[in-house]
Image (tube, rainbow, N blue to C red; front, side, top):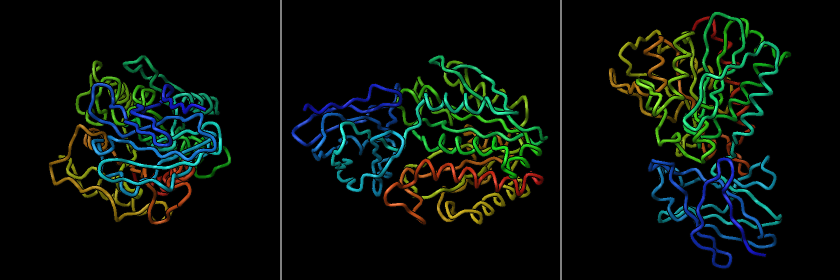
Length: 373
């Protein structure tokens, strides 16, 4: 049979350079109107019974080439369960992996994909739950809806939003876990949180980049997490409508959910360096991080980003902007494309299921300090 490689689907991204026998040379396409690239997602048909070797030739020019060492490609035969390809390596700017095909069709991806179709399934399912209100805050440049789900009746205003960078699909897996927990009628923690707070949840901040198979930008190559100081309808309507909705409610607690290409751990980044920093406000962020580390082995405090110096915070980034703008306990959660090294899983790596469990732990931690926020 002839080997067929295809990425013409929701979140697909790959270009075929050459197929020579059992060796497949590929390239990742750049985000539209941008030089960012790293996300890939494609399927291979017609290779059953063969062992193929794949080479992504332009991996060395990607946005974060330092993220490739130690990384493992994900693969699936049913698009439900995603495993790591153990024979993944990176050398001389080329990412290589090998796969033995025991089925007619296999999908490969940078991380377990979260399609826009699954997003709409999630929104429709959660919107039908008692006490949940759905709002379409606006539309993207491609005309896709910006969905926001609201639940709870408490006075604290909590905003959870994810996937500003569309290739960081672990962020929406986290969101699925958070929404399932918050709408679970039998969950005592969720009941407490709904009584103490009103949750405003944007599961996907960047639908256009998600559908287009981008790593980091929207339909016109804009990094949304550099737009929060001055969003515009022309470049970043996604941020414009969400920040506008935040202005309407105020924000007491905010979590921006992401993925990190290089660091093999889950960690939080705060808002050090904002002009209005106080030790009291910052202490609430540090308390949350310490409590989360105590609550689950899937989180740690040793690895993470450098803190901004006093007065040097980048206010175009959402976590800093929300802390400065609203006095919010604001934070960025980062999850790995690799694995949480402290308790690694050789077969599945950091997985959708673990993303959802971490979401549960985050909400349990928030419940323990919601009165102090």
